[in-house]
Image: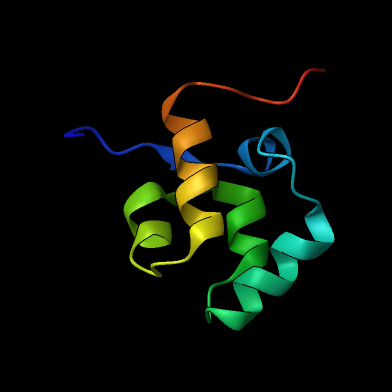
Length: 69
């Protein structure tokens, strides 16, 4: 896909993952979780980890899904 998206915590939740698990995942990959909460993260940064969770969350983000309010 040519257009990159910004992944947010809403996408993480929509993918069925919890905030605590996301925090642990970010730490394991050396990524700033607080900055992610404030600003989101480019999908390509997540995909560069090669992690299955990242693939799942990016797919949700690219489909435009967000958590219901």
